[in-house]
Image 1 (tube, rainbow, N blue to C red):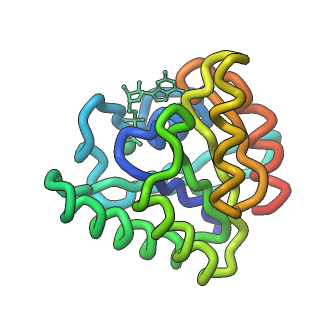
Image 2: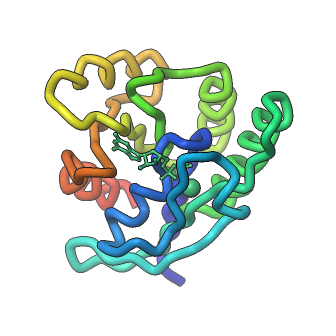
Length: 162
Ligand code: GDP
Ligand code: MG
């Protein structure tokens, strides 16, 4: 089958927006509130002539403790089924304890990981993205899934590890 790219990260960081950006259409459901994407949804995608599957994740619970556990569980399943992973963090929020847990899962998996610093809508926010070096996953890729800023460079890089 096609190579599988999983998109993981906490609710509201912009995973579904990023999926739509790559697909070039609004297919993945974007919401202001978490809990909209149920479990894992696969979309056939194409970039620079390469075909692959993108797996959008969600299905989070609402209360904070449950949410944390749910993120980790979803991440674990998605990582298992993926050939490479895009780990999305909101650059304006920075890394949380949930993100640290996901980093452990990613390390254990040994799979290629691309760290996405999303919601970098302007040059001024690039500094925020740089703080994500602290996660120890290598270079954070600053993008704006909403406006498309940096998305081309990100996808070129993703294809190089997929
Ligand atoms: P998900 O829960 O991770 O799938 O996040 P969504 O894609 O549903 O997006 C959550 C919210 O963040 C929505 O209101 C999006 O419009 C917003 N959002 C997503 N990407 C960006 C971005 O690059 N910049 C800004 N400013 N907002 C974004
Ligand atoms: Mg979503």
